[in-house]
Length: 228
Image 1 (tube, rainbow, N blue to C red):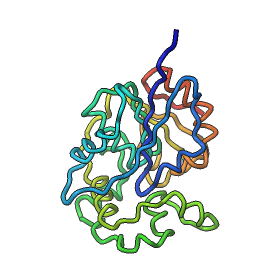
Image 2: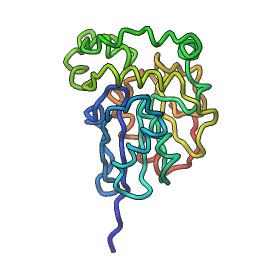
Image 3: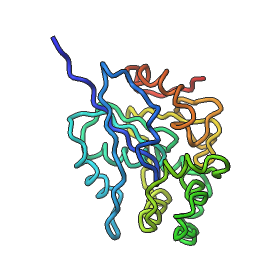
Image 4: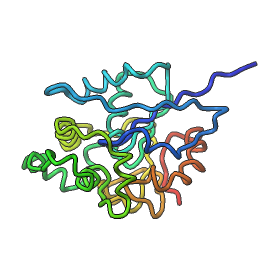
C-alpha cells in the first residue's frame, strides 16, 4: 500500500529567490518540496490580493506552507484563503505587535518612503534591507540569493510589512526564530522555537539545525515552545 507524500511549499524572504533553501532537506520518502518565487506586484495591489495570485501556484490540496521573513507574512495571508496542513514561519512575525519599534515608527511617519530603494542594484544595500546584514566577504553569496531587484517590488514589500494589519497570530502556526535576529528582534517575539546563535539568515546559515529539527516540528504539536 502506497501513501502520498506530504506536499511542502517554501516561500523565500524579501527580494530572495528559492536558492536560500538549497541546503534545506526534508526526508524525501515523506515529503515533496516545491519552491515559490516572488512575482511582481500590480499597481496598488493589496497583500491579500497578491496572496490570492500566489495561491495559483499551489498545485496540491492541504499543503504545508513554509515562509521566511516577509515570505512568512505572505504565507499567513495565503493560508487565510486556502486550507493548509501546517503553517511554518522562519525569521518572521505572527502579528503586527511583533514588529520592531522602528517599523511601527515608520508606519506613522512614512519614513520608509524615504529609503533609497532606487539603489537596489547595490547588493550591499539590498542585503541590509532583506537580511539586516552587510555583505562583507559574502558578496557572491548575497548576489546569488538576492535576485529580485525591482524598485517597485521593493517599495511595495517594505510598505506591506510596515502596514501589516494582522492583530492575532493564526491558530496552530509554528514559528522558528534566531536569538540574534536584528531585523525582527527576539525581544518582540513570543511562542517560538528559538535557535541559538542564529541571525535573520537562519535558513541559510543554520540549515543543519532546521534539517535536524523540522521533521519533528512538522509532526509534533502545533503550539510553539522555546527550545535550545
